[in-house]
Image 1: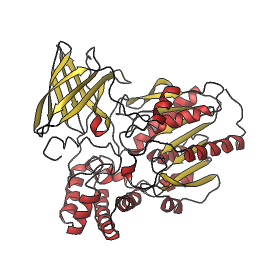
Image 2: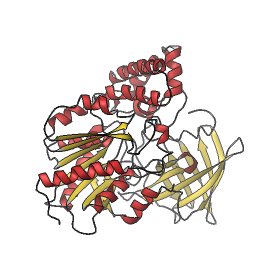
Image 3: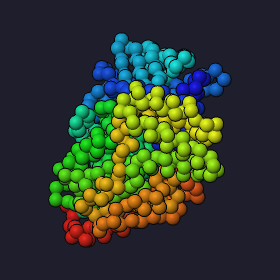
Image 4: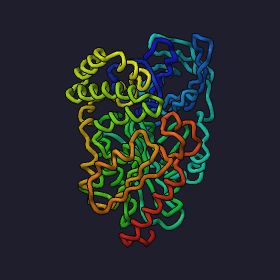
Length: 480
């Protein structure tokens, strides 16, 4: 992290690739086991303004709750930096003194609650400041009309989903009348909560509402160690993520016996959906929305190129970045232990040419799959070996792969090219659609937060058309 407190701008972007830029900085990831058991104060939501050395102020909010396992837990929120679900790893309350601790970012807020005000000290790195937090009726939410309408019209019911080593917190939405099928919704990479939140957008909530309007029930959940799910989040552990999805699918199947089941995954969720479709207890259909087919090591290098180009890099700058990133991935893949992996990665960075270093700093900055949160992950070496095309080749149920023409994170042509040839797969590429299912004029990831709409009408239409054909082909026309 850079030295000044904002550099508290290092509220990281939870695994979303390259939504922010930083310095050439690589450090080991600190893994945390989850919130400490104990009591919670009567006030669960707090807000205060942090004074910075430059005279500016930064709003800081904290929300506290019992997670799905009944443990004290919470989120650290920085509305000005669009950080809504930065998970707390410790919550301690005793003798009217409240202390919370975050990892990524490393932040401690601690102090007594006096006459309803939390008189705390804010600490991050070498920076400390007094921070007075008052109760607030509601933490700050970014108003995105499409997402707000989805949550208002189809709030669903809270569910606790048992999984190995964790309890997942989810939302189960049922149509108001007869249910024709049920769908498990899976979000993208990183510390993704149940709605797929980014910049106020909640695309999975929007998808759930659109499905409910067509008679399709749905279940979506916070990843383990995220928001209200218990357990430890590891963005590199694709096997545990898959097992959690299998647990959620069993949960959904038990609540809709006899109905056809779909798994619909966005981005990384599309990869996991394909794994479930090729598994021992598959759903009846699989949908990948902008999900990868390429082996992940190849995809990551391709992303480094396409995202840099979309951000304005020249061909030579993109070449320099990719030549360096490939060396980093190759070095990382050789080390199962992060303690030996990180020095190997640092050696690659230290030997980088001036052109490589400049391209890295300008168009990546050590974020996403080249960031410390991924490179330091315990399972990163196995993640690099994952090849989604193998799951698609083994799929024995109908599938839809939906791509966006303006997707710089999962480029359509390169992924379609390696897709195994088999019956039952429908492939659709939508013009003008980016990775997060928006209609856009650019493939640049910076546009995601600037566009007010998510889940474009073209995406909804293509998905609805395929579902209707899938139901008819399988003879599923009855409702429960």
